[in-house]
Image (tube, rainbow, N blue to C red):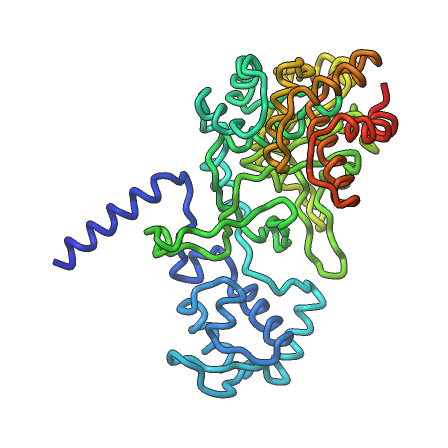
Length: 440
């Protein structure tokens, strides 16, 4: 009976895991972690030096390693008089604290590297995970694109050029007038691929630690409590996230594309292209960065071709890392005005995002009106077009219905008025909106 139940459980788990191309298995021994005993000892001692005392399971929870692996390590530290019991803990465990000798050793380790977080993942293991989870392994069809863009207004004809570009995984330029949703499109493109991936919290190579997980760009996800996956054991040094969409704009500098080493903590921060692996990297408003477009593109011309990048550790050693993301350059300028032909060949898709027509403009007002609790009135939008667009020869932009309705909402709330689409309200808000934000 036990054999049958095991087989059934394994089959059920296999069905769940088949939806993932990569799953970080739980290490059973210290050797399987790929880490040295000295490194793990340093993490344990630095943590105890910070908190004073902790149970063995509490330490295991902090460093994200199985308690069974650490028990032998705890015994060794006690034998060498680096750590002592301070009392019994639940579940056949103990509370531990450092001896004077242990505190001295922890201080020495902390001076070399102040990191006290989860145990790191060797770089080679990360490289294998990226190869297994790359977006280039997927080929989303029209149906998946339409689903990803279902909650926004988009010209159906755009799928004819956007779909093949997404499938290529080779990168693209999205260009056109500002305010037409280029950034929104780029974020939706990530949804076209598998929803979730696993990434390490921290990497290690040549003794150097690199923080990879960044809550500013990575959204951790939790498995459904009812899911079989909940019972599947995984290496907690890894975190399951939504496929990342890393967006950078005018603040981008060359420093963001290299490992940034903090001499005080002894830890390096991963560059943006590493954080965007297996997802999308959007260079928004390209051409207006604090660095010249040619300098940025020259930095990436080889990685775009070879799908790997070279970074320099604090020790001076160069390491090869994956360059596996869909890079999207969003710009208001013509791509040919920014870069030369050599680079344009490496970004094979250039997609122009056109202004919406009048029909889509009305549709956008209807969508945003419903979202903002306005009653949509077509005749009021006609008034807006006839009075404020046609005489000034203004182009429609996809951001304008949302922005104008937001300003009307602010006006109504300030004056304790009911939310309504009224001609006089539009007359009032367009004076400041068009003059300050976009001009003629």
